[in-house]
Image 1: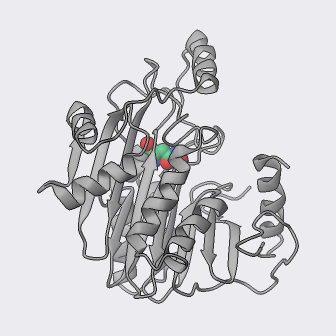
Image 2: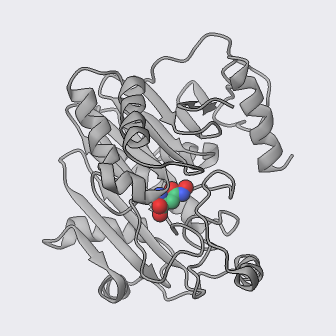
Image 3: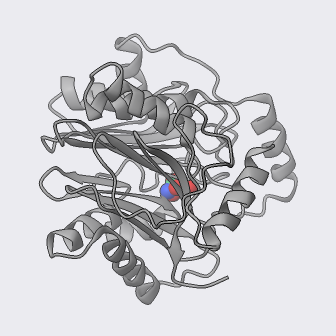
Length: 330
Ligand code: SD4
């Protein structure tokens, strides 16, 4: 079954109010449908934007089998997405800008509140790892463009061509019309925002993307911006975003979600209020934004502008794909 048809089937189950659940080892079976609503996760756990059951499982196993931290889990899970040539919104195989260059954005935060980020990075497969190096080995938070590339090369990252034959073909077709319209969901985005909590109840998060397909050369979105695409506060919780980055940047969306949780809102309500902030302030016609969030106690939630935003939650008892509630209905 293709990813798309699996997605449709699972969305259908979620719409019916039936949580889709499967075992970690057997994440593609549609048996074991849970009927009770899922309300919280038990550490260690992982949650991510879109359809990332396998990647979440890799992240979870990094904490469970290898006794590593939530930060290691984030790197392992997101790296797997970046390496996947079929994921056309992240890393290798990502859709290029309108000049045909694949440029990558990523950021990472640990439980201590440290942050690292790279933007407009070309020819390097794993920006999430480079972001971790920036966080841990430089006095800075963000490196961009040529400087980020040089830094990555110094750290031993290989120079590779990120444009795969299928992304190139799609782009060549697009060039003929050169019609640019950001339509998230419709173009099947998979940008990964991932949050993990380990056994010590420490939260880390990461975000990685090739950004909007056929964007203007030089465009950077929300994903590498701390507070926009991702925010972690180990005392409160964490949030991450997907969708049209410009809307998320203008509202510093993920930081807003975490601050709303600090004020006492649960993750679900905090995501909803952040979406309302965007919808009430900007023209969001055809523009999707989705947030996911979790609290220190393992509560989680998600909300989007339009229907169709899915996310994945994974702990030792479940690996579930859920559809977020949305401001507009179907
Ligand atoms: C961006 N927020 O670059 C990213 C794109 C995205 O699902 O999330 N797509 O604006």
